[in-house]
Image (cartoon, rainbow, N blue to C red; front, side, top):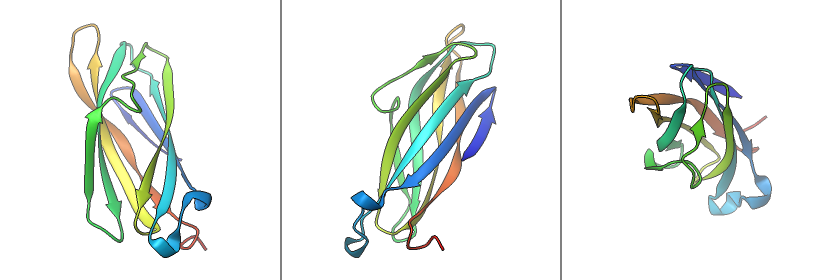
Length: 128
């Protein structure tokens, strides 16, 4: 698990290779990642957008942007957390992801970027 803290917001990510959904001989590797967002700031915040940079050893860098996470734009009061699970397909069994969330401080509308820490995606064929 990797973690990063930005302005009191802690983002932790845990990644899992999914061999039962992968087909290495067809260059299809499936990973899931569990994200936990903890609001350790004194403010109520809302997650508005996400931006991911996905690096695949067998392909070029891919950037994915959109509103919220898994169809939600959660509001987190001070001390609250939000957890979700999502996934990523790679053409190789080796890659990495990192990114940012755009958050809004509800009290004053201030927008700020929260770092999503870089994490590795390594299939069992590379894991010795």
